[in-house]
Every structure is written in structure tokens, then in C-alpha cells.
Length: 239
Image (cartoon, rainbow, N blue to C red; front, side):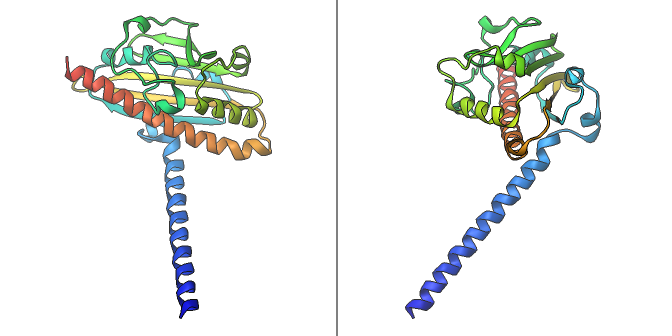
């Protein structure tokens, strides 16, 4: 009787573990499918967008989109103030910030110009490459920019981990991140974001780490777009 009960318990545990594993695999597959074109139709994903030329031979080209119930001029200030130590990234703050992302427009971060830096950590970050108010913002990052900056005191643990993974996966890289605001019917905005990446020839570690990093970027970016939408819509509704 005892042996039978023990075998039954073991079988139940194996069934539960198998179910959990299958569930995890299913979620991973779904996220992987969404990662390339979350929120966009094929025509949007196929379009040429500002910033594409910065990373001409991209090995990663991901386009995502979202509709925002606010006009472009109400969404634009939220983009301009983005960055570590600024308005934040409107994503999972415990990973990429040392505090909370702003829930209001911060006047002190309302100015942005070509060549300015949008920090990812205390020591550096993206460079502004294209700036068309209320229409287009394109950010750029490469190995040279990263090597020219220090990690800086106070860098969140999540960013330190991402940096370590990046060094393991990409000894040399170029990346662009474009934000396109298009007016839509009813005073709304269609926000399209495109991430393009070129990295040096894939090594053994890169083949393992790159998919993990890509999935992490998608999860953070999706949350960022939803956070941006929520803030812009709420501010617009409040007048």
C-alpha cells in the first residue's frame, strides 16, 4: 500500500512538472512570435522608417505598434523626457531605474536636441540621431558609445546584468530605436517603434544569449509602450 501511494505521488509530481514545462514552453513560443511584430500589421512591419539607414545590415528588425487616445503633440513630451534619471522608461522600473518613472510631464526635461544623450544608466546611453517634433525620434547606440562611457555609481542591478549579457553576446554592435508618431482619426496617435540591431559574427555564447536578450527587450519594450499609452491618455483625459 505504501509503495503504491509513493508511486502515485511521484507520478502526480511528474505530471504537474510536465504540465508546467509545457505551459512555460507555450508562453515562450507565443512571446517569440509576438516579439517581431507586436501590435502591427504586415504592411507596417514592411515599411521603410526613419533610422533604418543607421543600421543598414540589421540581423534584428523588430517593429511594434500601439494606438493612443491622444494627439501626437500630447504624446511627444513623454518621449522627449525619457531616460534614466529623467522621466524614466515607463516600463519595469525595478529593472531599469533607481526610482519610479514619471507620471507627469517634467518641464526640466522638455528640451532635446540632435546629439543629446538619452541615458540608460548614470554613465551614458543613446544618442539622438533624428528629431522631428511631434513626429519622429530616433535613438542610436553602438560599441564605441558604450566603451566611451562608464557604468557609473548607482547603476541598477538589472542593467548591470543586461550589460554583462550584452558583452558576452556582442563584442561589437550597432542599434537604432525609432519612435514614429502618426496622426489618426478622432485626435488619436498611432505609435510605431522599430528596433534594429547589427552584431558581429555569432559565436557560441552569442547563439545562446541573443535570443534570451531579445525576449527580455521585447518584454520591457511592450511594457514601455503600454506605460506610455496609459500616461498620455490619462493626461489628455484630465485636460
